[in-house]
Image 1 (spheres, rainbow, N blue to C red):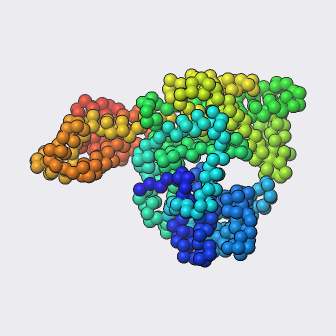
Image 2 (cartoon, rainbow, N blue to C red; image 1 turned 135 degrees about the vertical axis):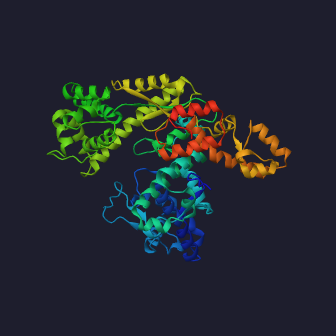
Length: 561
C-alpha cells in the first residue's frame, strides 16, 4: 500500500480529524468540508515535505493564501463571517489545531503559525478526494501558478524531473531499516498510541514519514514550483534525503547519475553580494575581500576558519563544523559587539566582508529579520546562477539533454559532466568568480526491471512450496531454474495459474532484489555484519554459480560455511 503525497486532487488529513468533521460539522457546513480540511492539508504537506519542520513545530500559514483559497467574503452559512477566519476558529475551538502565541503576527511580514494538536498529530494520514467544485477549481488554479511554464529552461527542468524515477521498494526497505519502522505499521496507524509516549519513536516516526513521502512524490508524480520570495525551485527531489538519492534512476538510460556542485557553495555565493556591495560603494575587491574570495573559490574556506579557531577538522566532524560555522557567521543575528567565538574571529580576519554581512543583517525591521533578509538575498543569487543562467545554457547546448537541479547542484548523466561544469563556470564568470567544482556519483542504475533481469541471470530458484506443483522431489527443497523463460514454460506446463505466478514473482523479487542490488554495487557502506551474514545465507540458498560465489567472497571478505 502506498500513498501519493503529490496527487493534485486530494487533501491529506489525519483519519481521526476526517471522522470528527464527518460527525460534528453541522448539516449546513457539511458541503464545505473540503474547506475545513484545507488548513489541515497545508500543515501536513508543509511539515512532511519540508526537512526544516519537526513533528511538533508550528508552521506559518499565509493569511493571503487562506483568504484566496477559503474565501474572504462573508457567507450566511458561516454565520455571516469570512470563511477563512471562521474555519480557523472552528478548528482551534475544537482542539484540532493550535496557534503559536509566542510569535507576534506582523501583517505582510510574519504570518501566524499553527500546528495540529497532539491528540491528532500522530494519527494515520489519509488522502481524501476533493469533491467541492469550488475547492477543486482553486487547487487547479493554484497549481497552474506554481511556476511560469512559458520559460523554456523551467519547463525543461520540470520535464526532466518528471522523467526521473526511484526504486520505491528498495528505498522503502532502506528507510524501514534506518528508522526501525515498518511501512505496514506506519500505514495502518498501529504506532499512533506508542508515538505519543515514546519521544525516540516520535522522532524516528517523523523522519520516516518525511522521507517516505518524498520517495512517493518522485514515484507517483514529481512536484515542481518556484518560490516568489527567493526564486528557488522546489521539487520532490529537493525534499529527498541525500541518503535516498542512490535509488534514483532514469528508466530509459543505463548510465549513472552524477551531481555537480561547488565546494564551499554558500560562502562562495556570498561573493555575489560582496561584488554588488563593492560596486555600489565604489571599492576594489582587495585586502580581506580578496582573501575571502580566493579561499571560497579554492574550496578552502572551512579549513581556514577551523585552523584559526583551533578546531581540528576531520572527515567525521567536517559536516557538523560546516553547519556551525555557516550558521554562526551568516545566519546568526547581528550584534555590534560580536557574537560567538567563530563570528568574532571571522570579524577580525575579514572586517570588510563583515561590513557586507552587517549591511544585509541590519536591513530588516528587527534583529531576527536581518539574517532572514541575508538568507533570501543569497538564495536569490544562487537561483539566478543555477536556474536562470546554468539551466538556460544547458538547454541552449542540447534541448534533449537530461538535467535537473537541487538548489546549488546540477544532476546529469556521465557524458554530460563537462558540459555542466562549463555552464556553471560560465554562470559564475558573470560575477568574476571562479568556482571549484566537485563531481559525485549519486546513483548507479537501480531500474527495478534491470534488477529483475539480473535476478534471473544468476539462476534464481523456485521456492519449495511451488515445486510441489511440479510433482518433483528436489534435493534440499529447491530446484534451479536456468532462465525466466524456462520458469514460465514450467509454469505453463504444470498449470500454475497466472495469479499464482504473479504472486511467486513478487515474492522472489522481494527476497532477491535487495541482495542482487548490493551484489552488483561497489557501495557497501550501510551493510552491517548481521546483514552480511544474512546475505551470505541468501546467496547460498540461491544456488548461484560457483564463480559468482567466489567473487562475492573476495569482495565482501566472507567465508562460505
